Image 1 (cartoon, rainbow, N blue to C red):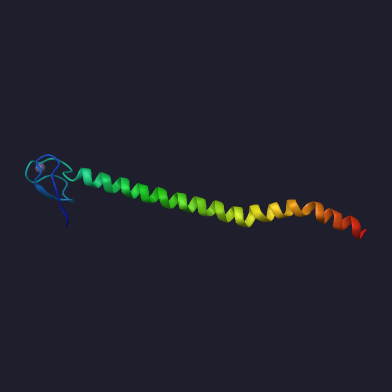
Image 2: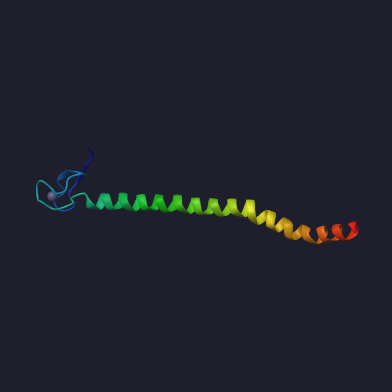
Length: 85
Ligand SMILES: [Zn+2]
């Protein structure tokens, strides 16, 4: 169990302690846990953005490019069908 200094009295307190055993301050390691929470939310946001961008890239590659090709090939396809007739 890692120890941190209490935000109130700087006494060494376990990070999981709900109150400082010396001064009784609640959440003596709150500063650390908030940083950890922020870091965790940052990781979650990064993962979400990567997933979103990955999905967008996948969608663009598998749907956008064939659609563009279809649009670009359309006049040629029309010409082909016209010459075939
Ligand atoms: Zn304390």
